[in-house]
Length: 366
Image (cartoon, rainbow, N blue to C red; front, side, top):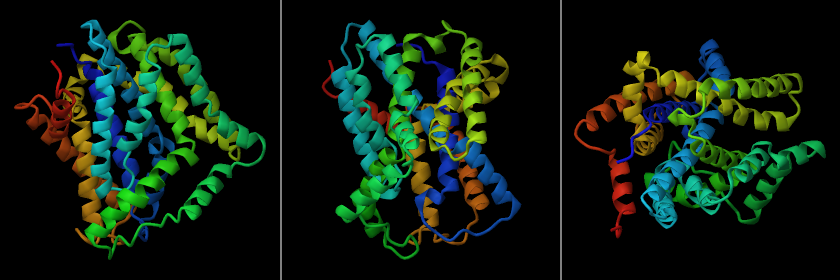
């Protein structure tokens, strides 16, 4: 059995925390009146914009590309072409995504499942070709074009046109809508809203770029000690710094705002992996690594629990919580999941949903 890269499991757990905090800041896509909390809400809003929004989603995308490479590489080492099985794995992931979408409008699993076929198609491409394609995606050529010609809202107008043409409705009231009605909207209109958002926000370019970057990192054995973390950060941190400064100097240039999260990931992931791989922080990275092995289970369950607490058909806290309160509850939930994952993995090799996913993936394999 191939040895796991434990620092990557820990990084995955940190990425999951960032995604949870971003969802909490947005009230888990449940539109509700905001209960003001004064200065604290302002601080959390600054953290959201500076750290959480977009960035941890892209870290998750990067890790998806890396995991794809590791699975393919380990299978190829045994003389097995895993591409067909990985495609089946993506179809199963889409099933998990649809299940999750019934409870939570904002699922990323279905989007990963659809775009995950791109790395499969590019598996045999030379690394240099992948690097060129990755660079193009991360530089957001369509956003640059729209910024250059003075139409930064072009994709939003496209989205509004699609929504009106196909009569996509907005979500029913989270305060009064029954569970069945809310779930049905989530897997019909809600899924289309999510897919269209990934396109009109230009997020699709960054997502694919991160998939490819993860593949490249895998080929270069970055997280297996063959490339120095420090060396990576020396090259990538200044690039992000320049983009960040330019974004501050030219706040009206939408393109800079769009590409900044991707360049943040370039130096932040190596830094995080380096810190979490040190023996002196095993007290933290070891339990995080256990959660990182159960991210599918934790991602699905945390959103289901939080949406149930907020919506009228569940805990009925809609309109009663401030941003700080929602993020505080989400943080406590993360700590509970961290404890639960460490207890669970003492007896089982995989998380509940991970085990089901693995079992269904291996059906029919000799």
